[in-house]
Image 1 (cartoon, rainbow, N blue to C red):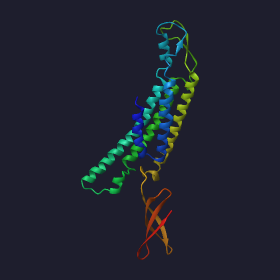
Image 2 (tube, rainbow, N blue to C red):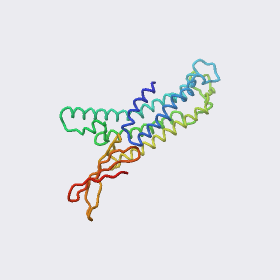
Image 3 (cartoon, rainbow, N blue to C red):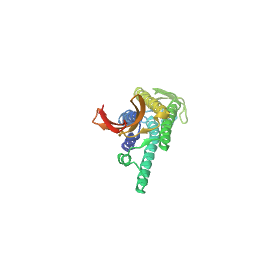
Image 4 (cartoon, rainbow, N blue to C red):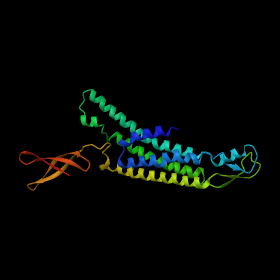
Length: 269
């Protein structure tokens, strides 16, 4: 499997994610994909070759290995990463479609915010909000399902040192020994712990996106427009505040106040 291609695709999803989503992608890259590519494949590379049974009966060792390990840990983790990553790719496809539709409407003469089109700033709202929230929900489901599959398929999360097999064509109950069981148990617990961390991040992001005030989230940090309250002569009125970035540490704010005549007041934070 070409993990580099998957990492490149998911890297493009990063700019369309919330702050919690960016943390989830970082954990996915560093603690799951990198560990799976660099270390786990070497640990499980000799699992069937070094699965030794105390019998010379032809086919007995292969049948016993298939009985206790129907799917290799490394391949099940790879399948889990594919399922968990697919919802994020659907969000990227939806964003690309939304951007394409805005450009098409702009070419047809409709009024479109040029700055938003130029900056490629897409807000998570409307149909995109449903796509993004649904992707988080399915990521949680996939993580939980695969953690249960691991427990059910391997009868726990600990790799045994010795297994007893009486499957045909073994002549009797034979003893089979697993290579490097302690190291494999350590990797299994580590990958399951990271999976639990990812599930926790997904639950936090799902709760955040479910709140009505969090429904509108810009996917790219740009200047934003808000309204604030101002008091003049004992009366409150609504004023328009336009903010733009100023260097790294602060923003410039320009306030338009009505005091009988229009007057501009600017200050910095």
